[in-house]
Length: 368
Image (cartoon, rainbow, N blue to C red; front, side, top):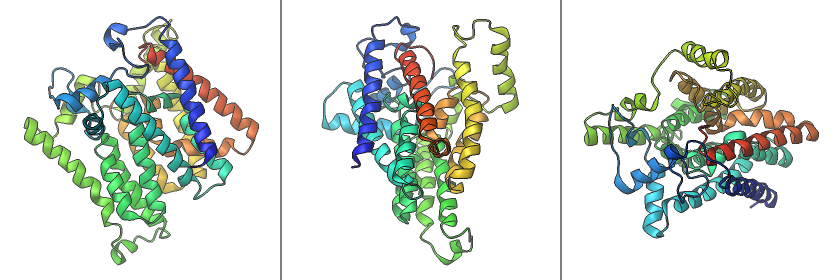
């Protein structure tokens, strides 16, 4: 393992743990709905849903929140770990996410090395770890697992290990619904590595494992049907979580009203929209930089992911979607790496924002 990558990771982990522990002594916001009693700092909100699935299985309803909205790989990882070691749910998920995050950092560095110097590759890792919503990598959410599997999918693709890329991307497809977008991404990477000669698909068949995500995603659909009588139960329950297909322009118009009507936007309950709208603006900036500095095939993944999120009719969690679509963060890291002082300024601002948001999250302020 690269010692400098380990150092970056330990600094990131140490800062988040310090902020997390310190935040527990501060006043809570919305603690009644967050249910934080005796839980580790980053075990909040949807964390309880994932461990509930691991212990009790799925529920489905179109009238109230139900667990079928969440994909199964992360709960399965919790269940498997619980079978081996008997620990509290929050400790199990925390331990798993530390391991997933460390592996993600290691393989992201190796992925970046295919195209960039060691210094720039380390900067890419730092830019992802210290991206403002990166505290989610420690929470009881599947973000760390999702980003790890996304990185591994691209890494094995670059190594021409298409069978492994297909297997890992198949797992990604049952971690979050957006994982299915790695399939067209890898197919584009395959074509890109063959000089965009699409005829190669008819001459070689080493690409066929890249279709594996269809099998695992279809398996989850089949589970929905046999368990609840609705193959799309995971979609049918989304409206209870505030998500449904809608006009992106309508979403922007509706959320912009908070800036016009709420005079206390920076202190009121609508404060998260400051984060979401700022993230939307930054995503456009990041995509522009990435288009010039990152392999085009990589960007298929974040573009499809962010587009699908945009079509749900809300900007909620836009910053988190950018973390999931991690290739979009590579461009800014490369761009700012041209000047070490500029990069340190970018990283410092990003890290500060991450720690502030982490403190809010630990205290149950709804910044997710």
